[in-house]
Length: 262
Image (cartoon, rainbow, N blue to C red; front, top):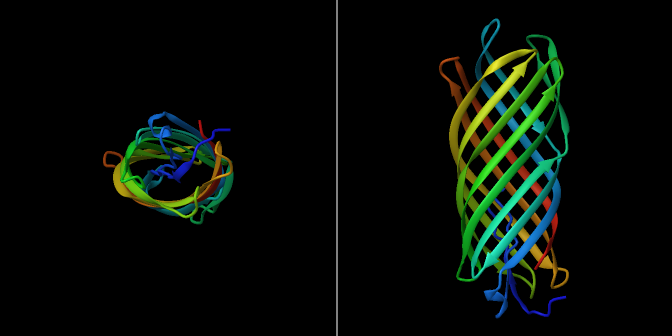
C-alpha cells in the first residue's frame, strides 16, 4: 500500500462524455505518471424517437415510432495523468434488451433484440487544481435484430470539448460537475420485413452533462457513483432516395465503479 497523502480526488468527465479518474497527490507524486484503470456497471435509459418519410415497396410512407431500451451497461476504462495533463479512454457495452414495434397500418409487429456500445478517448488538463478542460472523440452505435427478417443500426460519431469542476467534500472524497458540447455525424440503416430502407445521414450538435461522487477505499483503491445525460436531435436525409427523418436520441445512465491507482 502506498504511503502518500491524498490532496484531492478529481473526476475528469467527458462525453459519456467520459469519466476520468485522475487523482492528484501531494509532492513528489505530482511529478509521477499515475495510471488509473477502472470498471463500472450501471443502468441505461436509452430511446430513439423516429419521425419522417421513407421509401417503401408500396411508395413513400410517413413513419413514426418510439424505440426504448433499458439495458445494463459495462464500462472498462483507463486514465493516465502526469503534471496536470491527462489521457482517458473507455469502452462500454450493454446487455441485450427487447422491445416490440407495432405497425398498425400493416397489422404487423416486429420484436427487436437490441444492444449498444460506445468508445471514447480524450485528452485534457487541469485548471487551478480543481477545474479541468478536455477535447475528445466519441463513437456510439445501437444495433437491433428483429423478427420478420428485420434489422436496424443507428450510430453517431464526432468530437467534443468540455470542462468541469470538483468540490472536495471530505479529505479524500469529492463531487464533480461536468459538461461537454459535441459535434456529431449520424447514420441510420434499417431493413423492415425483408425490405432494405435506404440509409439516411446527417449532422447535429448538442450538450451532455453529468456529475460524479468519487472517494477512496484505500490509498490504492477508489470507488465512484456517477450520473450523466444527453439529448441530441438529428435530421437524417438521403435526397436521392427520398429519405427525410428526424431522430430524437436520449440517453441517461447511472453507474457505480471501482478503480485502482498506480
